[in-house]
Length: 255
Image 1 (cartoon, one colour):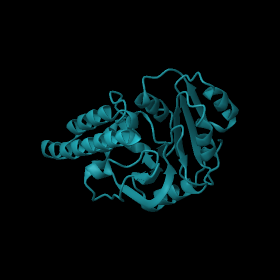
Image 2 (cartoon, helix red, strand yellow; image 1 turned 90 degrees about the vertical axis):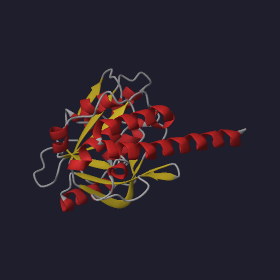
Image 3 (tube, helix red, strand yellow; image 1 turned 180 degrees about the vertical axis):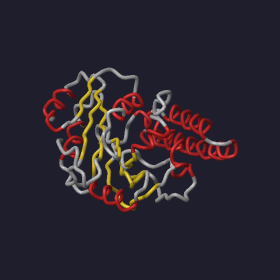
């Protein structure tokens, strides 16, 4: 986008990953390009799409700073490919189908970054008739609540990746949850009490409830002490059971 190098404003690196999403990718690109805040490095990581997605990306090639189109092993791999190319101070992951609420959303995030000087600045992300997270979280919130923030509505200081590593590529759907569990106990968090992002519900994590649960528990075992992981295991299990019950009732209703 040719705004790299502005000495007065933080450079924000926005990463969009996409694979065969010709119907939604343009909405995401437009949402980013139309932001009033312009000091952006825009990175697009395409997993070798074959449905016309690359034709749309080619249309916007002059507005994309870095474009990769090649096979990957999944979301974590695509995230990490983009992260390794970041030049900005803060990183945001706005995947295909996701979008900012309006043209000033990014500006609000930047104001919060500058004013709070926090490692992670986040807000509510809206999807369907709900939002992520359910409630405002803060530095004093329990880690199981903080780790439920939306990566689409989060801006992460690049230094956190330098200090604590990239996304764990053994996780196929809950790589963001694992990252938050690993990083947030050592970071400062600032929450903007506004809904600033539209999240495209229906991704792989939403479709595979069992895998989502299994990886959530594995992330807890990897990053938490015995007492916390046993407590949070109960919390995860109850949420998993509730989702299964609601899904069952929804199927009954359709019949």
